[in-house]
Image 1 (cartoon, rainbow, N blue to C red):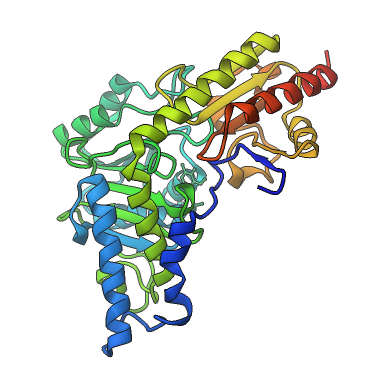
Image 2 (cartoon, helix red, strand yellow):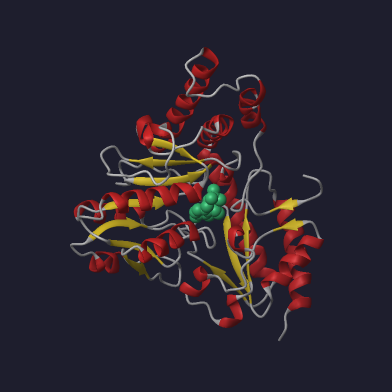
Length: 381
Ligand code: PLP
């Protein structure tokens, strides 16, 4: 890839060739509007329905429970606001965690201004919520729990099945932001008692600008955008047909060989951790040691500035991240690393490496060699 070593698959991935091939006809040949009744329109509608079936199959949902959106952030907004607005006469309490993506946190902040009351659960040093704390904060006004499946910065996988059980037992709806998880782990909305789930195609080798939302049949859910009647009147706007076809193809391909893919990424992850721990002193692995996304490693390098580290790596053709790509303009320390209680000398020195299909052990050797040199030069104590 143009001499670049890309280790930022949690930020985005390249579009797979087969995904692109599936999308191309829908730009210039099959360009009809899916709402049109003539054949080119109907064929577009059919293509959307095929993609819907593919998404549903992967997460064990029904096709009619899948809604296409413009991105993961939109899916989170639609799910949380959609459920909250529908149930505001029943209750106004929502439970989430301190380490959610801003797509969830800022949605909750907006709801707070509108009279909802939000509990932000703490996490432990590994980034896990406490199930007992979750159970204890539930009250008669609680309508929704929104906890991410896996964290975008530190990769920790939350106890989703157990959260689903607690939600079901207490008759509360459960939304999970699975934007980082889909394509990287198996999810079954039935056995995990998930009522609503967000995903985004560009995280699993699909195109940017298209997402999907699962909402279990029967869950009250109000549209938040006015307009036409697309997506069963839940998401107005002419559908991004090429994008939706791409999302469908990408999710199908991702789950065709998910076990093999996860095995490869886990091996790369473990190799990278072992090399860094062997060659560079004063490092700290952030997130759960094992219960983490297969391709995610977040390591802090004591007394090294994370921003400087990124720039120096970029000079060597290495793409990595200090946290969420969506936050790269921020000067605040990461809310996730703050929530897991990192000491100041580790707080602003984290490097997130997220592996993907094209990475090899040789790439990791190149990365670690450069890291060793740069960290030695950049440590400021
Ligand atoms: N949720 C999580 C956990 C994410 O990591 C991201 C993006 O990084 C989003 C939501 C937002 O997804 P999108 O970029 O498709 O809006």
